[in-house]
Image 1 (cartoon, rainbow, N blue to C red):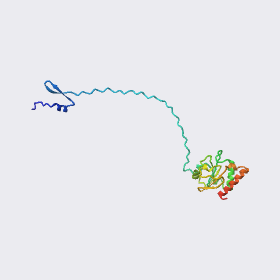
Image 2: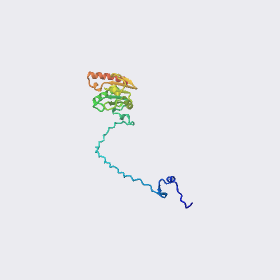
Image 3: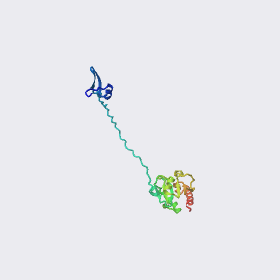
Image 4: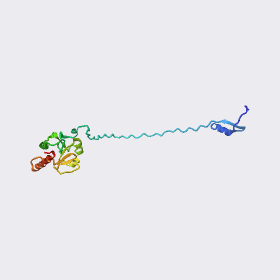
Length: 213
């Protein structure tokens, strides 16, 4: 038996060597021939299509625009430096005026106002004169910065100060632990005309009431 050749059936050969064997019929019988599996044809080389360069676009550089930054009042700065005013606010008396031509108040009006304050036993050290043309005069802001006890408005309506009321001129009005007095512009009280004298007398009567004179 050792010299005999063992012949395997076709289906078993096909299972054992299906990747490398091919069964051929021979005139004398069946024989096995080993045939190398053909290689698949090499694929054609892939050539990448040439991509045209992107056109160069000249872009003009736009100059940077500077955006103005609003001025911010530091929270740790004393109140006397946050508002531009004349006086020392020693007795928390605020005097609001409107004078677009002056930093605080023109000389003639300031001289008259100083005389009125003197008659009330006050001076510039006791008050703060604030020009509405150059400052924020909203009541909430003034209150937070100056803590007024009296607020005199010359030629300024209460609505401009954002107060919730409107009162006649020379009427003393109490609100939020503060006394308010509205009066015409100081320019209406300058000079010796009958109209100016009348306005002065009305102002004096109201000031006497406010300051207990």
